[in-house]
Image (cartoon, rainbow, N blue to C red; front, side, top):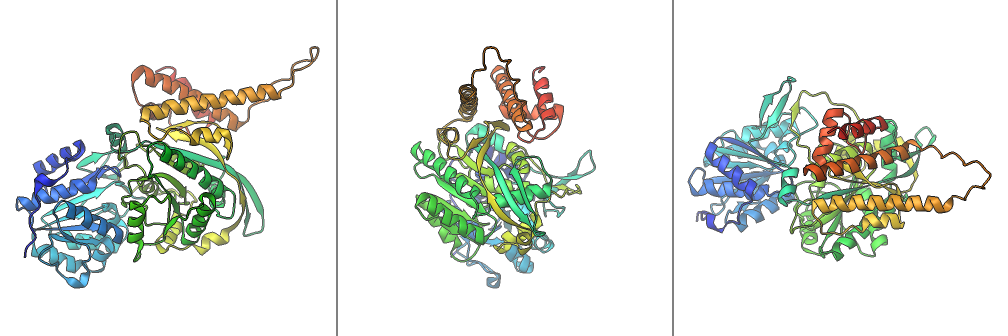
Length: 577
């Protein structure tokens, strides 16, 4: 018996961006349509509504969804069934065709790459809409891209979805339109774009606070030399990478201290209106993931759920965690993209993966809003590259072909292989041996601005930031961070005054100690934030847009990474605006 057509009137109401994109899609009626929407915006609902419209009006007879992972196959099939579209998530290449009581099937990019001719025959047998979820995965390898193109060229319609429409390589993405810019480079072009800043303004996603932790790290090189560095201080890329991985070593003090702070933040959110709030630790490999889970149990007294790979049982463990009130989940790769756990509100970025694509996918797990005022908090190592990505949360990127790739020394290729295999890279381990690491809160990044000064882990100063209320609007977050920073600085001045002995009446006053470069940067960041806040109150412009305009006028990285000279130039510039 053929599957019944879905009833359009049973669909949930569409958000404004979904309605606008659907109207544009139905107006164009083109073979290919690319929709870019920030994680948590509702790409799945939009795509299923398009599928229902085309099934009902007879444009297509079947639907094929291509997803990155096995778990997402199940997630797609469940979402489709709720709106009357029956998709076979158990379809295998050997089946050749789905049963008649399904509208179609959900497959993975790997499945298509292994047998593109099977999927081409299915596509040619019935008029088919193909939904390519997270389409950038079709560029992961030549076989995947060629397979997707060969399998779905005969489709009547193709709908491409992505929350991160960029890659760090030159592999073209099938069915995506590229246009040449003024610099001669080809850039991907989307037909509908709904970015994080748009979704934040509409209350669709949560404001994200990044709590960056620095600290002292020590390690031994393979030549036997012992090195020490402060995480976040200016140094070569190789030293940054080694200090970063030393901090993430489960045997050091950095991870236990950060996990303790993250769990304290999770408790605040649970007590402030998000009683089921959950936390996610994103690890680089299996060994570290298991070690982090043990640390969490030591810190909280409660076991963490662990998801190590895209294997049998992983989907069930994720689903169980999503429906429970368990505090913590530790994952390597399984939860980095597309997985829907709306209650995740606290994250620990405990991986050395540094690409904008991976970072955006990871942060996307925390932004889905369920009710007004929910915020998300992500704990990150105070590494300049990550601080820049955190400051540019609202940046919209396209896939650029032909752009030279710069090496940053952070071993993303090795880490990608480690994540794909869910095991640590032996080459990474041979390069150095971690000896020790301690943690302290370096700064809080929100809306492109940096707040706060260094605060040791476990001190009342750190607790002031960890204790920010959990239900806040974006403007309230900015206001409270500014207030916390002012209180922190005032307290530091009071302590300094009480610790300084009064000079003798006849003794000359001692000259003030010169500020270190780190102290000077903190003072300049504070001054810049105050000036930006004043301009925000005068003009109503968001803080992030003001910071972006200053970067456009003056050049340079986000304020969290900026040099003393760059900060001074921006201060002078904002005073003239």
